[in-house]
Amino acid sequence: MLEFLYIKNPQCPDLPLHDHIEVLDRVDSSLECVVSNVPLQGAKRVGREINFLLENSAQSPLELAQSLSLLYEVHGLQFDFDSTKHTPTPEGTFSEFFSYNKEICQYHQRRVECCGKCSEVCPTQAITKLDPQIALDQGLECEDNRHLLIKHQACIDCGQCISVCPSGSLSYASFSLECMQEVAKLYRGYIPLLLDHRADLPLTPLKKEVLPLCVNLNILEQVALLTLLQESGSQIVLYAPQDLGVGTLESIALLNGIYAQLYQEEAILLASDLASLQACLQRAKCLESTHFTPPTIPARTKRDLFAQRLQHAIGQGDYGRVPSASFIRYGHIEINSNCTLCLSCVGACNTNALSIDGNTYTLLFNPSLCTTCGYCEATCPEKDCLHLERDGIALNPSYSTPKIMAQDSLFGCKMCGKPIGTTKSVQKIAQMMIPRFQGDARRIATLYACPDCKVKIMLEDMLDINSIFK
Ligand code: SF4
Ligand code: SF4
Ligand code: SF4
Image (cartoon, rainbow, N blue to C red):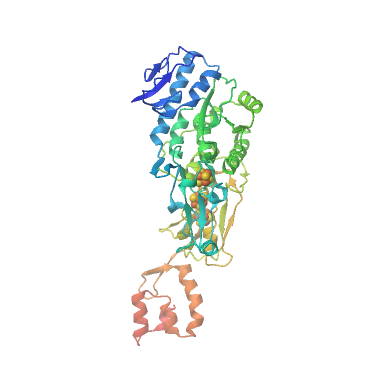
């Protein structure tokens, strides 16, 4: 099978194309290839951007040859990363356009409802929520707290669920975030023009710096867009003649807010018709100083990737705050001094925003990892202790720096000194139990002892109880 196939475009018949692109004068339906510039039965992918660029760009033949080489690479990468599953059934083959990781989902198995955004935006009920109450109302069975029901057959590949998912539980199979990390690097020094992967491509003059990318626009969220912004070192033009999903719209607003405060520039120029597209293409420019490629990109969460890129842009500056929206939400938590360090909140948090340093008995919070799901707030057993504020992103280094929320020391058994818990948790239990022990000094003393010494306290008659309380 050929890798890259170029069927000559009558408007640019002779281009000095690179050797790895096979050139033919006309379509040969028997050929198989990975990427072709025209629809072909034997082509795994069609690079629609290729002829679009040839027919609209102001680039010279040499520049076009270089750009075409990049566009073939863009599609080669998408082919390599594509993990879409195709399942044959008696009714025909259906595709799983996205994958779902329930381990980091903010709805799955939680005692209270903390998310479900994907089901709210899904137009076809391909994703729905199920909890005991919904099950009761609909005559279904639900044997656990709650979980999502996913029917891939009902999915119309609109992509809206991908951009609203705060945790990265949902990943678009044919253009994942990992794929975007690599594709975006090919746009270095160009102005990316984002076009819908299915819509007709517009006829519009493109200045030399513009390089198109056809994608499902509704999957684009803050991480994918910031990746493309920083890797290209440029503003982005996004052409959406049809309505965009709420996740993409709110992500664009968030990034435009951040760029306005950091660089006094727009990040993404959004065009909804041909006239505004041409105006945006004229206005768009490279922002060389914004270029950034992280040194290494190991497997990281969606929030973590965003934080790494945003932190680079912020540096040591302080640029105020950008607000949260209704689906793309950011914020922070506050913990009051009545925290007993019981660590219920750490157990509830599946994003690692809350963590514990076991060496210093310190409860830490990293705002950049927090999805503001609120499960920690619902889980904290203390009254008026942990509060969540969905107040957006603080554009300063504190956004991605773990902050000490509560600290404690180890409490040693009053008899043998062996650690039995944190001081606050021992005091909390003692506070609850002492009234029940009605002044029984022996039983009260057991509250401050390790399991072995508890037995001794209760059994040894000669023990000087008062010495334990010293
Ligand atoms: S891609 Fe669209 S139709 Fe499919 S599950 Fe997501 S929101 Fe629903
Ligand atoms: S949007 Fe993401 S985190 Fe929220 S319920 Fe759906 S899959 Fe889970
Ligand atoms: S810190 Fe709380 S609100 Fe933030 S992600 Fe963790 S559980 Fe959710």
